[in-house]
Structures are given as structure tokens and as C-alpha cells.
Image 1: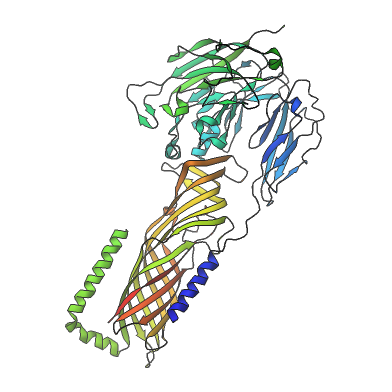
Image 2: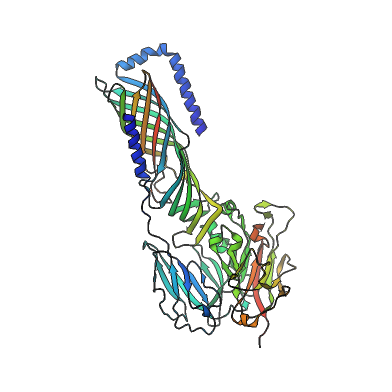
Amino acid sequence: MKLTRLLSCLFLCITGISCIQEEAPNAEADILTCTVPADILRRDPIIENDKVTLMVKSDTDLSKQSPEFTLTPGATISPASGTTQNFSESQYYTVTSEDGKWKKRYEVSYIVTGIGTEYDFEKVKHAGSAGYDVFYETDHNGNIIMDWASGNPGFALTDMNAKRESFPTLSSADGYKGNCAMLITRSTGDFGSRLGMPIAAGNLFMGTFDILSAVTNALKATKFGMPFEYVPTYLTGYYKYKAGPEFSESGKVVSGRKDMFDIYAIFYETTEDVKMLDGTNKFSHPNLISIARIDNPKETDEWTQFYLPFKMQPGKTIDRDKLKAGKYNVAIVFSSSVEGDLFNGAIGSTLYIDEVELIHSVEE
Amino acid sequence: MKKQLIISVLGLLFLTTNSLLAQKDQNAGIINSYLVGLEYEVKAGLSIGGTSPLPLPKEIRSIDSYNPGLQIAIEGNVTKWLNPARTWGLMLALRLETKGMKTDARVKNYSMEIIGDAGERMKGFWTGQVKTKVSNSYLTVPVLAAWRVSPRWKLNLGPYVSYRMEGDFTGDVYDGYLRELDPTGNKVIFEDGKSAPYDFSKDLRRFQWGLQLGGEWKAFKHLNVYADLTWGINDIFKKNFDTITFAMYPIYLNMGFGYAF
């Protein structure tokens, strides 16, 4: 009798503790989408964790723009979505989470200038809690026109104690002229290997690194391409390279294989369905127009020039109107391990890159 | 550890049997003890329960699976009756026990930190599935007030202190996303079989205390059936451990048989 009473008491206790409470209000404060008139855009808005970049046509009147935002359910934004502001310079918006406890400040910029054609890797800003390096380009007035993407945000996840100098993509003072980009293949330690990503090649590319997919599908995380209104003909620049001592494939050492770097550029047409190419289809997508890729990479401790012609894919032509409308994308990509996207490479492989130029045909 | 425990259980049972066989010599001792109001008992049983926050925090949205596992307890105790009628007494016990479970829960905005083998740190807020495996073994000393309700029924209530000998608090997170550092940080999705394991075993506290409520029914002259509910009062984690933002308490029901001498 007492036993049954005890049991029912326990049962009550357990039901008491296993009551699922009412859901807490959202703590996140994200801009999910940004809408502006479609006819001013050269490419879809780039929405990052604390930044929205709108690449717009050069005749866009920046003084009166009213971007609209959708947010995490329940979150609020200030200034309000749709507020008209002067975007000649970046404007800042603060998103407050539904529970009111978290705020995130977004930089929203409109960029009318193209991505430029000369890249000297002198300008670096810092991001993330580690302050890892982000290379960026400016126009003649000093306005930022493009951030170079890299896998650094993904690497940051593998160790939040990591210091700036231990990231795969960073700035170095040993440039051909001034500073340069230094890409190093790194070990991703315990977490990286548990996730089946034992190394992180140093990489630097035009496009965006989609950290959302970094763990689930790393090849899709590297989204290549920025709008380019010219027909690229050559990619040139300088490099130095030293391969790491021990080559490994998916974490297993393979003797007799030597690591090599990769430098390439792709030029492709965008369509409604294909806005960006990524690591899965960078050389195989039918929208590709031309590819420039280094074909004689070698280990060298001297600055060595590369001069790579864009080779047209068979049967491809370029539509001048589409070109003017910004419907073609270009992406320059550097990696310290050619198979780094498959997690094959040698830890310590180091590629230096400097004074890169994207040469294009001159339009009349 | 479980193996060790099973061995100790078997060992104790063996000793008990031995002592039963060698009872003639000891009968005198037991009778003497009985005369001064002392009673001895050994008991063994299985436990079911949970190591859980109380009440369940808002972060936990659903509990999708629960497995109590095999949790055992083996105890020797002595009761000193304080009144001539032998209805009130004091009970002291020594118990070897395991407390554990496995759960799979869905959480929203759950604060977590994972430390890798080489000291790498991954910290943030997780929304998604969390699998947890708890397996702790304790040496426990309950000090209880005993009340004989009727000739066959005995109840006891009082505090206990536990010393954790072995501890395991591990699991992994999957099918969800992590916000780096805080809810406004970078968002990273884990799906398609990608998971991140965690191990908080090192952050478990050594000493625990709590309350125990028990009942015992005398089935035969020497054989008792019992049930003990133990309710942990302090957090199973160390004070300076703040990755899990809520305290977790071990709450277990132990049922089995006792042999009274």
C-alpha cells in the first residue's frame, strides 16, 4: 500500500519536472532578407552576420534609398525597415531580438563601383572574436568596394582561442611590394577532424564564405563570384610557394605525394537559377564562359610571376547587353593546397600572393 | 566502472552467503545486537531516474527519448531503535550505487561550450538535438530517521552524502545550428549526420548531498522489499561551471530486496 503511494508520489514528481515550459521568446536578431528595387541591383544582396552589401548599378541615386528588411520572428529594427536614408556612405541598423536581450548592429552599404582590377593586398581589417584578417578593396575615394572572402570564419569555429596569426588566411609584411596575402594550410585540431575536416587550406577568393553550410557541406560554403562588366582576358600576379612536409588525405598521411597550390579565375553567366557557382561546380557548370588556371605551379622561394590566359569554354559567346547589366560574374581563387576543398593537403604548405591584376578587354 | 560495481555486488553477496553459512558463530552476536536495539540489513536493487534540471528550463523544448540504462545499488545498513516499542530509530547506511541515464532532447538557444582534446574551445548557443549520457557511481552515506509504521512496514527519511568515484557526462549535438559565442554570433548549421561531441565529465562535482525517502515491506522473516527515492539538492556540476546555465540534480528511485539479519 505504502509502496504504491511512494510510486505515485514519484510519478507525480517526474511529471512535475518533465513539464515542458512555454517557449522563450527568440534571442536571435538577424536580418533574413533585404529588399530594394530589383532593377538597381547588379547581384543579389549579400547578407552576412553583421553586414548587408548591395551591389547596385552605377546610375543609382544613393541619396534616397529605402531598403526593406525581414527579421528573425519578433525582432525589431531601428531605423525601421523602409526608412529612406542617404546611402552615399554606409548606414547602420540595430536589430533587437524578441526577448530584448540581444542587439546586433548591421552595416548596410550600397556599392556602385565595380570590384576593381588591381589587388595589392595592402588593406586589411579584422573580424571575429579572434580578429582574423579580412582583405578588402577600396575605390579612389577610399570607400570599400569588396571584401575578399576566405575560410577564416569557418576556421574560427574550430577553436575560439585561436590567435590571429594561427588562421589559414592572413596578411604578411613580406610582400613583393609592401604587404601580401599569406595562405597556410592548417590543422583544424580536434573538432575539425571529428567533423571530417582535418585540415583547412589557406584560401582567398572573390565571393562569399557561407558559414551556414561550412560544417554540413564545405564545398558549398565557398560561393565564388562578383559581378564584372568586362570580358577578362588574363590574370596576372606574383607568388611564392613552399609545400608542407607531410601530405595527408582526409587526415591520413600519404607518403610520396607532394602538396601543390592553386590559382585560378572563372568567368560565368548568372541566371535566375544560377546566381553563384561554388566548390562543387566551379570547373564544370554549363554557365562557365572562360577559365584561367595556373598549369605549371612550382615550389619556389623567389617571387614568381604568373600570367594566365582566360580560355573560352567550347561554344560560348558573351552577350554585350548582359555584360553591361552585370549578368556575368568573375571569381579569382587562391588556395595553399590544390585539393584543400577535399581536405587533402600538407599542413604548413604556404602560398604568398601579391600584386594581382585582372586584365580585361577594352570596350569602345 | 560498472564492471567494478558488479564485482563488488557479487563480492558482497558472496560474503553474505558466507556469513549465512557461518551463522552459528555469529548468531550470538546478532542476538546480542538485537537485544540492544540494533538491526542489520543488506540490500540490493535497481534504480531508475534522471539527472535533470528542476523544473525543466525553457531551453528544453521536448524530450524525444529516455533510456534509464542499468543502474544498480548495493547497501549495508544498521538501524538503532530508540524506544522500547521499536517504532522510532536512527538508520545509518553505506551504499555503492550508480546513477545514470541517456536522453535525446530538442533544445532552443541552449548555452554550451565544448573543449577539444588540445584545449580548443567552441562556445555558443545551440538550437537543435542534444544527446546526453550520464553515468556516475557514488559511495553514499545516508543518515535517516526510521519509523516502523506497522510490523511489516518501515519508512525512513533523511539526508545523504555521496562521494562520486567515477563520473561520465558526455553527449553530442546534432541536427540544428550553433550561434558562435552568443545568439547574435555567426550561425553554423549541423545536419546530415554532422555532430559535435561534448564531454563535461571533468566538471562534475565530487561531493553531493540530498534527501532520501524510503519504504520497506517485510515479505518474510528475513526478506524485505524496498524502494528508496533519492533527491539531489546540489548541482551535479562544480560551482564555477557555467556552460550549462541551469543546475542539474540527480533524482532516482531505487527498488530491490533486502536481507535482514
